[in-house]
Image 1 (cartoon, rainbow, N blue to C red):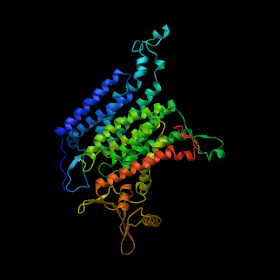
Image 2 (cartoon, rainbow, N blue to C red):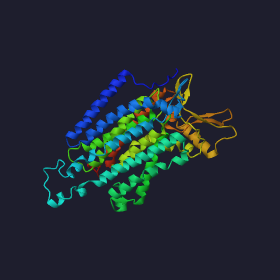
Image 3 (cartoon, helix red, strand yellow):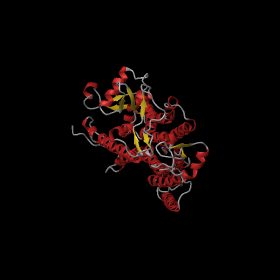
Image 4 (cartoon, rainbow, N blue to C red):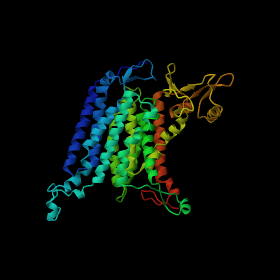
Length: 470
């Protein structure tokens, strides 16, 4: 079935719905000034507004991107046309503008209290303080520094993503660049928090003689490595319509759910501010991501590009490092971690790695099948690699085809998408995306269960103040 050229105009119904949503979000946003700032409500309103703006801008700017050469052909469609690429840049720019506009709201009360006469009539002060005009020592500068460092990191990674989409930077050159974008985060973490100790499991404590073990500078190395992995992991698990955005939305929703666990406790939790900080960044991200998903879902009218993958991964890094729950995020990235480990033979050149490893589209059936790496008769894998390939084929982690003489002709490519097709057989592209997204959600929910329940088997308590029975 031919793919139609994407329209650059919104339909009348879309325009009416978006206009209504935008007006409602603006009204709610303005109303927050009548109270005490209400930053969570303001963030939610900006998220809805970000959805409407992103949804409207993507089709309008699509042709401009295509004229600039930012276009691509969907290889999993019959008679497909070129469609705009790098639409994740629109999401990232809208998102950055939203969180810049949002800067005053988390500090609204502090600004009012610190301003002479600014709604501060019930506060009694000594005359020497009144003469100073502003009580700068009362303002939470460390909190503001954390917020601004997050914006710097996200701006840096957005520039990297746009540069990659424009110049197609080689993998070995761009792999470590996210670490530089994380430097502002690590500096603020060192100044504001500085905790580099980890809690040891109860069964190790008698041997070590203490409950906490200080990793020192290794902890910063771990966070730097994490900053590299998260953006790249979203970029690796890609290749079909909607999968990059849908996996990111699922991870963000799981993080929002985890934040809510700390905000809905019957008592004031000491980590409340950290998880509010996380929500301030995640809610606008969800707004712009849902808008992109509608355009990027099967059959895709636009491609999100590498910009979105890097940007989404860095959002998760920002909230987990500055929110102090990076280990929780690791449990939500299990599919991405498995995909990376599974892909290492090709990523590190042990097995030939084609330019694109996305599933193969069978034009006759309209279904996706595992894409393969071809092996020539005179270029067979080394004996130890051949044995490993045959072992993986025996345990259903690989498709392997031999010729009449027992030589390997082809093996399926090492990605989770191809592996899923090995297990489930050929399927439609949208069905594959739905199943991978559902798998991401189920494993993420299990990860949160492990974090807050099963962890009590080896730790005395959870940071939700749930105590182990052991």
